[in-house]
Image (cartoon, rainbow, N blue to C red):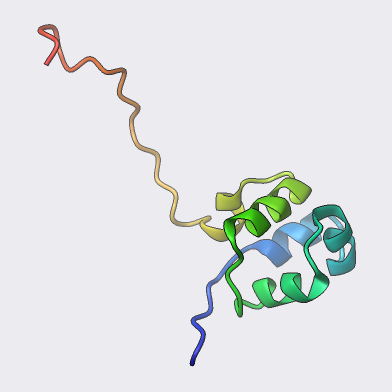
Length: 85
């Protein structure tokens, strides 16, 4: 079965934090092997692993895995006009 690679910014953010894979592993509790596979786009982590990595780097999961997919939508305050619709 062929794996689909997913571009991410894990390596870029790790290097910006001046960490090697082993140091990130110690901070996040994620194995260096898993970090390497994620950085090379060979593995998509479970949400819990993504959260651990993001927390260790001080960023959001979206910063790592969806940097180009984020769009800002207006927030509704629940009011739809003067008549409440």
